[in-house]
Amino acid sequence: MSTSEIAPRDAEQVEAREDNSEKDISKTMSEMVRRRRREKTLDFENPDNSEKDISKTMSEEERRRRDRLSEDPDEAWSVLKAKQEFLPPAISPAYSEKPEGSVRFVAISDTHGKHDMLKDIPYGDVLVHCGDFTMNGGQEVVDSFNKWLGKLPHKHKVVIAGNHDISFHEEFFRSTEGRGRARKDSAKDDPKQIKKSFTNAIYLEDAEVVLEGVKIYGSPWQPEFCDWAFNLPRGAPIREKWEAIPEDTDVLLTHGPPLGRGDKVQPSGARAGCLDLLMEIQKRVKPQYNVFGHIHEGYGASSDGVTTFVNASSLDIGYHVDGRPIVFDVVPKK
Image (cartoon, rainbow, N blue to C red):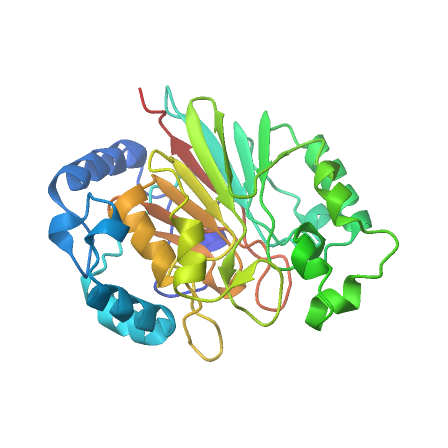
């Protein structure tokens, strides 16, 4: 994997480079993370209480302010951006030697039925896919995707759904309005059965799994976005989903991005990320990695010094295969 192959589509995403031969990137970043976990909190509302339960530390005034900002991600980012750090991400060269004692992850997302066109997938211990493996949740595409996963050599595969995988969100699929209505009478697709299609992967939906000593939590939700599945209003409704993320999560899989991290929509430049997700990550959960997709043009990775944020979208804004899988190594907690 060359630097050009993983060049971020969003200029604010930091390019993952292979030219750091004089430094052990994973060792350097892990030391930085440990130091920052001890010394610094990344909070724009209440830094003194960052280690406490958010719901218990916010006053009603703070909660109203946060709800207002949650509803307007561009305004929220204008408030928050100056206090955010964008540092080189803890990303590994695709075919490098895995550090001793680590678990190698390979991340892809948003293949939209074009999984067969991904020809160069590096080996790793765990392959993760962050949703939108179909265009509209069709059973035939899900079966094809599952079969393709079965051919890959990775010991573990973990999948979450995205907004396009509408048959995985039964309430939406059965809806009498919008896109759900357009699909609900399909004879081939049964939301109660389709989740059982993954015989070659672990499917997570607001759930966790521990693999090789690494805790992974996966959630498909994202703020309302053009009438698709797994959409929730910004503010309290979606915050409830993020508050369910366990604090000891090592790798967090979400379909949508947190605010300001690989979330810029083109050509408008508007932000689509979730403020509440960012706050839960930076104030409470502090995972080593948050991997997502959804905004194709946001492909790339960056770090705030504690969490590395990875937009692993495999297709670009024109739905052409463009993004290479992103590789990273996690050292299990002892």
